[in-house]
Image (tube, rainbow, N blue to C red; front, side):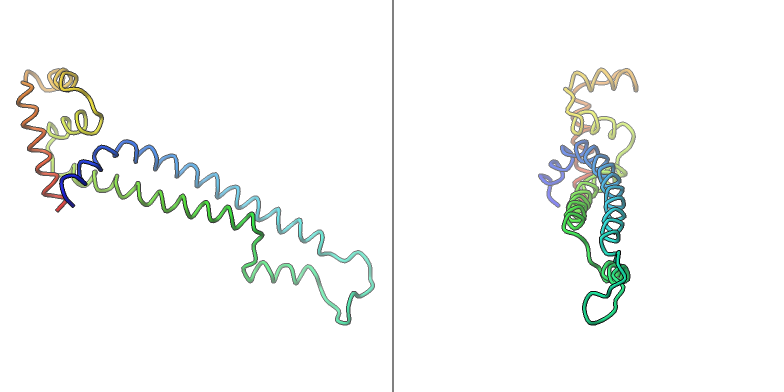
Length: 165
């Protein structure tokens, strides 16, 4: 991975974390909806499959409820249930993509010390100004200069680029 790709992933890190959380919630809701709709579909079709008279229909005796169950067991699904599953598959694909970004950035952060992480998180990932980063840095770690923070950022990014190769 080159430096531009690393910078791009760092810039999208917070968005990807938020998106991953949203998609996980969305998938849980879709899974619940799928469960309810599948149960309702089977129950609804079972009501219509029952024979209400004792006269045979056709030349072979049959059990319509049994044939319905066999149809569902062999993989039959109504179109609207297939659409829910397709939406879930799309969401899972997107979740994989955003979790990959989060995983990469988390692994690169492991090669940084606490102060370097602080600067990268504030300046590169969160987009704070140098003044804001410097003020927060001095509150947490003591007196430091803006040029020193820039050098620390460059050193940290260099470590991350090396880890991403």
